[in-house]
Image (cartoon, rainbow, N blue to C red; front, side):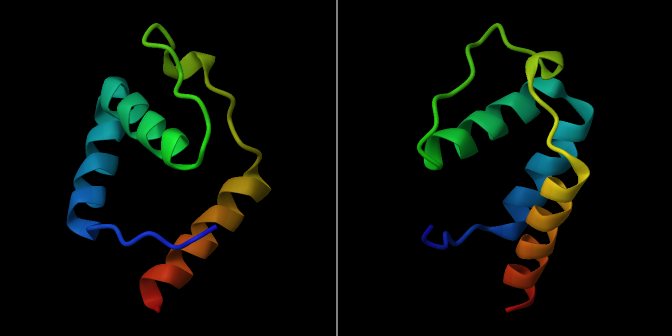
Length: 71
C-alpha cells in the first residue's frame, strides 16, 4: 500500500477527540476504512459493534506508524 502523508497535529487532535467522543472515533475510523478500500460502517454502528483487533495486530500497526514518524 502506498504511503500517505498526514498532518500529525491534525491526527493528534483527532485521536485525542476520539478517546473522549466515540462519534469522532467512528468518523475517523470510517475515513480510514474508505481510504483503505473498505466500506464505511453504517451511521447506526457504535464502538461496541466494531471488532477489536488482537494485541499483535495493533502492536504491529503502532510499530509501523512509529517507524514512519521517525523516518
